[in-house]
Length: 92
Image (cartoon, rainbow, N blue to C red; front, top):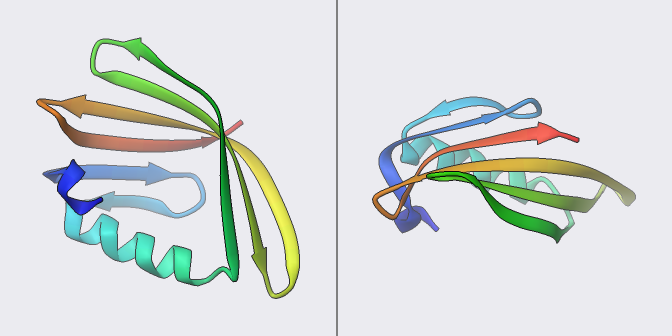
């Protein structure tokens, strides 16, 4: 997945914070995903909202400390020259 990002990519989420540069984004994702026993994404919709901006509506379910939890989120991807320049995750 790292190869999909521009080197100067940014990532923002209400839940994990703001990250600059692909190395920091990948490091955060590794720590975040390793904190769960089980993860599941269910895509609800994907559409080009504007030129270079893709909106992804998805449900995210996980198991942590034997507790099952889930939320619906919106992800915006800004793609420039075939690389992800920015990701923004918003609670639905």
